[in-house]
Image (cartoon, rainbow, N blue to C red; front, side, top):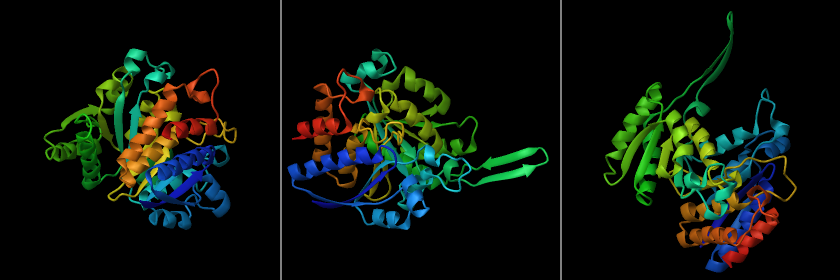
Length: 354
C-alpha cells in the first residue's frame, strides 16, 4: 500500500512525540511492505506566530489531499491570553470542522503492568476496556456566542445547537463499533434538564432500533461521571455530545494512570481521519526529551486501523507497546527506577515491533 500522511507536530511536546510515531509508521511500512510518504504543516500556536492563523489554508489543503493526519498538540502559556483574537485551539476546532470529522474516538484500556499508577484501587481500575465516542462538530463549542453590557452587568450567551442528523450519525457509529466489541452502548445526556438532551435521547432510541443485537442504555452525565470512577469496567461504548464528551473523556483518561498513554481518532464519513494523543502540549517538559510518546504511537495504530484499513498492522503496534510495558519500559510519568527518554521509549516499542 502507498499512503500520504500529513504530520502536524504543533506546539510543546508535539514535535517530539510525533517524531516517534513516524518512526513506528516507517517500521510498519518496512515490515509489512507499505510505502508511507509524509508532508509537514503548521497548526496551533506556532502557526499563529508564523502566519497569524492557527489553521493556515495550506494546512487544511494538505490535510484534504492526505489519506490520514497525525497531530501532536496545540497551545501553551505563550498564547493563553483569554482576550486574544485567536487562540491555538481554534486551529484544532477548525480542522475538525473543515474535514467533516464529527466523531472523536478515545479508547481507554488499563494495562496490568501499570495498575499501580492508576489513582483508583486496583480492583476498580483492573480490566477497564471502554471506548468513548464524542460528537465533535456541534453543541456549545460551535454555537453562537455573544457578550452584551446591560444595565445589570455583563451578559454572556452561549448557544447549544444540534441537528437531529448530527446526533443520529454519531450514535449510529457508536452502535457499529459496539458490534465489534461487547455490544453495549451507553448514551450520555442531561435529558432531565436540557431540551437538546431530550432530543438526543429520542434520536438515540430511534437509531438503536436498527441494531437489535446491541444493548442501548441511557445515563445522565452527572451520575455517569460518578460511575466512571466507581465502576468503569461496566462501560463498553459510551456516546455523548461535544462538551460532555470533552469532560468525561478526560476523566476516563486518568484510569490507566497517565494521560500520556491514551490515543484518539477523529473520524467522518470517509476514511480520512485525524489522530492525536489526548494529552496537551505539556510546555513544562517540552524540549526535555522526557514526554511519553505512547499515546501518539497508539494513535498511529488507530490511523492504520481506521484510515488505512490495516488491522494486522494496527494490532502489531498495539502488541509491541504492551510487550514493551511488560518488559519494564517506562517514561517518567509511568514511574520506574530508570525512566526512559521519549526516544528511548520509542526504541523500546520499535524493538518489540521488529
